[in-house]
Length: 345
Image 1 (cartoon, rainbow, N blue to C red):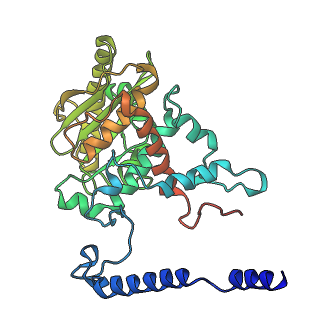
Image 2: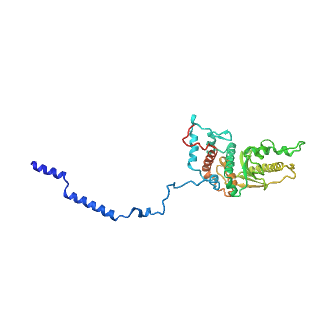
């Protein structure tokens, strides 16, 4: 009995001859596969003339003065730029970072309203957008020159308002010589204040807006100082509004002519003043007229200043994306370049 148990234990510990045969068979098969295997370097997907460096699948286009990317009104900025703005908006309390444009602090509600499709843009939004576009023209000056675009600048909303107020006073006869180049008008025309461009020397084209006082809608204005042409840009205004706008522009044309004469050292004479040619450009007809009219006018002037003939991309479907893009561009233009996501001061 004892001998039988010992024999069974021996069989359980020592492998059988059949198991040894299986191991030898597997080893011989592996050696045969290894001998017949194709060299790694000759595999089809590794046969390359040269190794390619590791890089993103969709690299960003390099930004140079000759590339339109940073000033294209329809190109969406890179995600990190949106991330910077979103991070700044989330900062609270002691972590809040002040944001200034030309010495004036900009609050978060400025961007909240600009990005809200239910609200229209106000004068502050227009002025900041124009200031950003002026900065872009300076930074990308080489691109504008290479594309033979005229030197131009955007003027604040109040400028054309102040000029318009002077119409009645300068038309009336006065014993004392009247001048338009006084106060903020003279300072801007002579390049003493932002955008710091001297008319007829640094710029030949002026972009701005006028307000229809009865409807509180803005109309875009392009003033060609050399060609004596004024073009209006609107988005489907009623005929009554356009008629009022044309009356304002006719008065403005007289005043711009007088400003040119005075700037050139000539005596202002309304009887021989240069007459401006007026024209109208109508943009896309919107569904949400009361909340997008100002924004669309700003984008139309931007496209015009870039020499773009087609404005089909300015429509109701792209409004939200274009609003967010404008917020991002303004923040990226004027916020300290060292400010990054995750930074706290």
